[in-house]
Amino acid sequence: MPTASQSPNALPLYVQISELLIRDIAAGRLIDGERLPPERDMAEELGISIGTLRKALADLTEKGLLERIQGSGNYIRQGGTQASVYAMFRLELLSGGGLPRADILTVDRMAKPGELPTFGTSNEGTRIRRLRYLNDVMIAVEEIWLDGNAGVVKRDLLSDSLYRYYQKQLGFWISHAEDRVTIGALPDWTPEAFQKPAGTLTGYIERYSWADRPEAVEYSRTWFDTDRAHYVQRLK
Image (tube, rainbow, N blue to C red; front, side, top):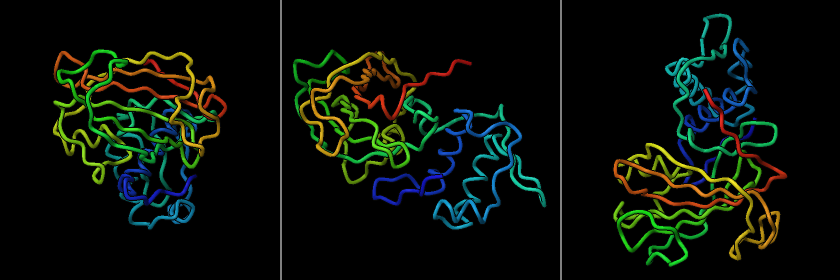
């Protein structure tokens, strides 16, 4: 298991652990009836306290994804609600799952450039550029545009999950999204730290996201390294 992140924009530690386990359950890396390692061993491997781990496990229990049997251990239970901060994050490691996190590159409010498709109700938007990781593996660069009428984005308050930020700080939540997956060339602003240089063809996702209005409130584009991650959509 990866070590939980304690970066300034990271989610609370117990949420990170809960999300990691939810994604591993969804990916089939943890199966129904599987017994988790002893709590002390899990906490040590994750680099967190027993109290933080138990808070994460309590969250999973509440969601019906874990059964805690006194004197026996903690057992995965399929079929519960998989309500997740990252429910709409479709990229996974090639081996499945992986905890998403992000490094913010830039946050700028500006007039929407003519190249963008039509979305929202304002001529302005906030552009957020980020590097994306699964566990500690760098897997994507992304550019998110939030419509100017959706609110003011404060960089110092952003978390790894933008949808959580929208709900906690701007008072709306993303109800549904549409993805268009193809291939595309990495943009010219791709950081040197990324494994592939600008212009390289790789996986490409365009997403339109809606809140409570007819117009999409957000438009994003993500370029992902197909040698390290793949796009997964599970139908139920």
